[in-house]
Length: 460
Image 1: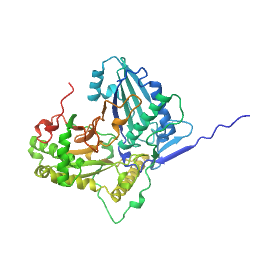
Image 2: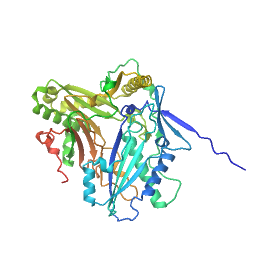
Image 3: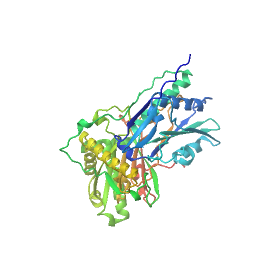
Image 4: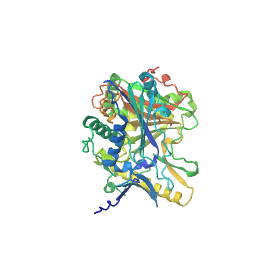
């Protein structure tokens, strides 16, 4: 007697309700682990690969699927019997741990991050990996660096670090219990951002100045560094400095992140005005990424990319004349714009424009493409991205938590990524915070009275 093979089932959902489809870029992190217990099976590559494949096939099926552009829509498509398993590569380096750690801190992408294809989703190219991994081992077995890259149109930072927490938990269970089939992961994911149409209010109109239309023939689907070389300076906000900022925030009725953003905005604004007094009438932009899940009552376990942005502008001279409390209020108002009504309006605005772009592409027309305003030229930009509450330093694959995690290099002027250190707790501020600041090479932050206090000594 023969048994017929089960029929293939196809599942699909649209990603056009993920505002981050606009990014169509890969985002990469480096996680540095030290073999403190001198374990022979430290990050066994076979177990690492097996755990990743089990995770995506059993719990993250869309991650083992494909993007597919069709008509005026983009779907994630996945199947019951074929999988777009995440590519995972390995290498062994004959260097010492200190040298490897320096490569991580200096963001040596070519050495430690997997090479990626174009992240642009087109009608012609559907074979785009969702996740790629490169594991770097030392010949001495002292340490491992995981270079992990994900496609931003499917996941935002919240979804990615939830994915990493689940992967590390599953891998740890395989290391401890061998060839098991049932797992206990901390954040079982759900997919597709839920319908939020009930938040729509036709009586309210929003400009959505955080986006800008540009000529499509001059637009490429990736962030561009511009004409100046952009370098990253790492600032460190000590426990004592955080306490001072929290007191200032309370005095101004704003949050800690809003006050820190105000310091970063004013500091970079003032130093650029000192370098070139003629820019005073130009525009100084503040923009921030907002995770709308909490505002919409949606769990962080939703694996989606709904992050949206808000922004505000003043002239460079106006920002220079304002005190920190006034600037913190501007930041507070910009973030406060992100109500449920604003978010559904943003979703509608982006969806309409993206469908027009897909129609233009399908019919070989060249017209306009929508870009985030902060990737376009401005005299001064402060783009605040806060990752300080992500579970970054809880990713234990069975051998302890990371010694250090390096955020991605973002090569555009004005990016300010607020980043936790290994012992940091967002509730208690019991350890330093880092801020990764992307600015043109000629900007010397030591000349800023506001920012020089945070300058961190080089590893060298």
